Length: 256
Image (cartoon, rainbow, N blue to C red; front, side, top):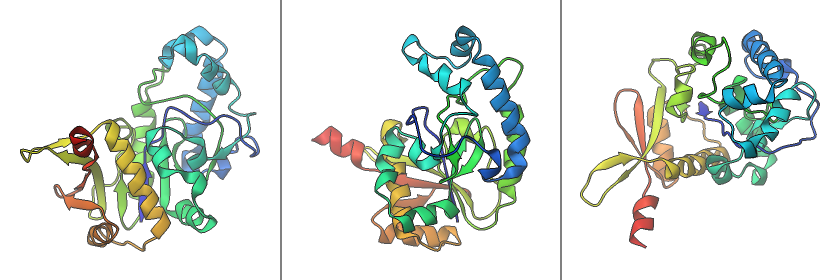
């Protein structure tokens, strides 16, 4: 199976790995698109004001310009360790075992706006680029969409898509049996179902961590549903290519 995660705008700085080498990233067929974006970001970083406007950065985020300027010279670290934020805090990659990380390396992808889908342990530098960024003369959807869709369509077996809508827009997962989008929902006391925002990320992080720790061999949606039930998660079908992960945390917080 493949588990497809969104990235995070917030990232750890530094690292101990060698500078960026695109040949060390998954899906080398995307390297020409990656080179274009790396070149564009480094060029734009020569004009801090223009870069801050393009990336919608505030004055307190000026350090992000330096990160983009140093894309090809800065140290790298594994993608799972680089990203921070709500989802990645709940995933807590730093406490995973070597065996856990080996499973993640083969089964978890992170969809970066800059690099496209990359492996969980692929070495990347700190950077700033998101789906809402507006680079001069370059539209991220057109730049990435067909190419990412093509590489994902080449995958076989179960593809579980946990990305947000913005990243799905940069390259849809294949529309076939075994490719499903997972969204996090909660039920109100009157039985209504609603999607979540902040709690959504925490639930996805916990769910991802549980999958990595148990390293299941899942070949189908039915396999996933069986695993989730045994692991204490409530996951149910919500359409021909959609699943819902029920999270009671918002209700519990409201009642506490």
